[in-house]
View 1 (tube, rainbow, N blue to C red):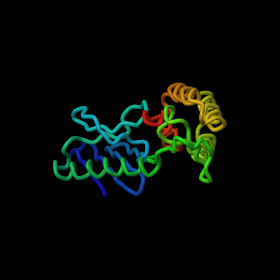
View 2: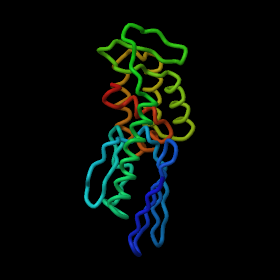
View 3: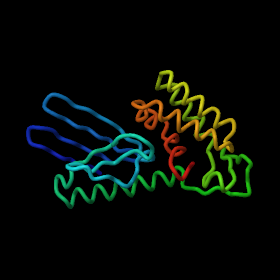
View 4: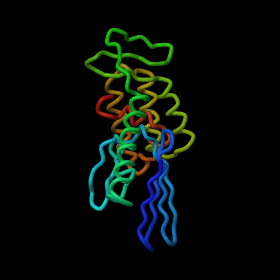
Length: 198
């Protein structure tokens, strides 16, 4: 599904909803930029910031997608926005929408560990943490990233320790401009940082 927004002699914005991502391209007379946003990282409730409708990350970050309001026409715009919101919810729920068993603190065969109900509403997926660490180490560099990876490793070692999630939040806040790269390569970090995961 695509949404194409044109401003005569200024720019063309193209959004493509495909599988579990949104591909975004903006083309001006002299430049072209492309971005891919993973739907699990996207907050499905957009914010109006005229003349745009902005979709933000589920964690602290600026807008990931900015759509021009009611372009190319209100019906086409609303159809695309509704589909985008629905897909963002579906992808997030498919990725992390399960509930923990409050009586089971054992690691399961799938690598999930349940915690007390007063600590978490969802289990932490240990294999997803491992994958996140691997993707971050392969694709992103920097001292602040090293601190983030250390926080993920601490959480992997003791998933029942709520303070490890606090360390992860602090480390994520510290990477500032690299937050988008982390969420693109390791979307499970966004799941860990959402309100219902902490």
